[in-house]
Image (cartoon, rainbow, N blue to C red):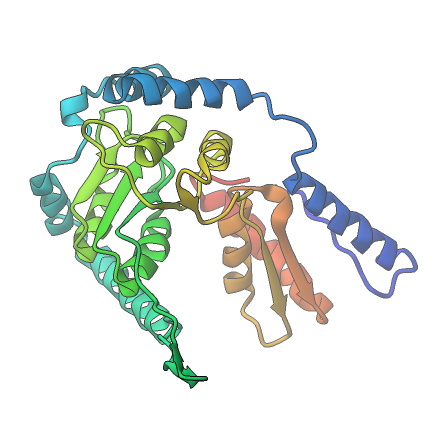
Length: 303
């Protein structure tokens, strides 16, 4: 049973309660003191800088409990193609539909190159050019976060980035989840590495004998990944220093409770305190709570 708090705007304490929730959510994202992982992450970065692939392999063995020799860190193209071909047809169709939707949207918001301006005998212009290489971090060895691949790699493709490198932590058998590989196959991405965590971020940012350095690193990850991105920023560009995901659903009486609950649980899996429903229909609240209980009982992972 998830912890649910209902705040009614008709209550005399509503504004104070909302302010307390807002402050709590903001403070959750602040790093007021150095996190306990700081020294470990800095040591990992220094080790990868000094020893390259050997350091990545040893740290992966220590953290992920699986041994991947440096010459096997990159996933063979044949394995990506096999994962793509053997994916359930229904799932593969859903992946393709998602890719098409995101591609259309990203194309529509692509920054156009403005026309040159003539002034005082001068021609002033702004040239928009894609980065050469981008690294995409895909977290989760157990649950395949397909959307991380689609929403991180596709904008780079639409922008014209020619080389995209995917990193994902290996599972207990040493392989990346086949569904993640299938998404890479659908996107035409063939550079995929079986590594995650701070050591993978360091490898992308610094470059190793087998992992060419990138210009920018994007994608979500846990505290070790975020701290590595934070400390390496400047040497490599990053998307942001991200905390756990959160969602605010605004719904009225026409909303479908099952859909509202599904949207909330999708984010509550990462942080139970960051799924909020805002509605003017109290009956919807009760229906959504019922749906949360029903759907949560069927989830293999959850808050």
